Image (cartoon, rainbow, N blue to C red; front, side, top):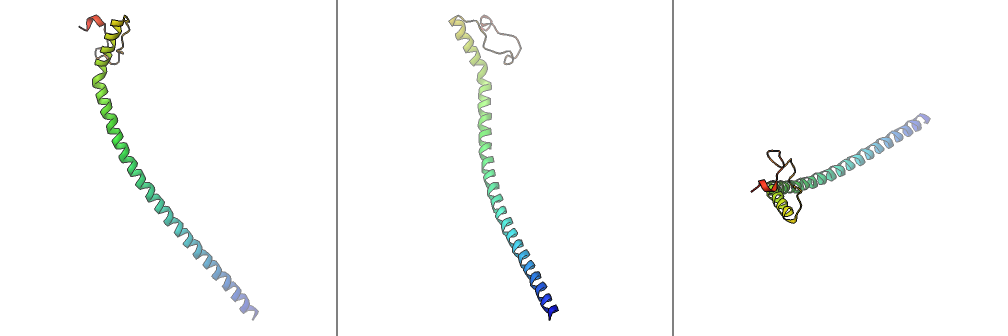
Length: 109
């Protein structure tokens, strides 16, 4: 009888441990499912951000293209205006001039 009660007690402990493990596995499974849902939401938002950055990148490329076409005439106009005002400071940096020489306002005409 004592042996039966010990066997029954160990059986109950074993059943409780298995039940606890099952609950833990279920809990872990639910947490994994929740994490997968959150990860999917993050991935969807990341895709929308990528689309927005693609649009911004094309806009930046457009602005850089326009600026590269307008920068030399703009610097020339600034040089001209400053020459008329009496300043002889060239506004065209040597990196923007194709032949790497400094320009003189009198030589441009």
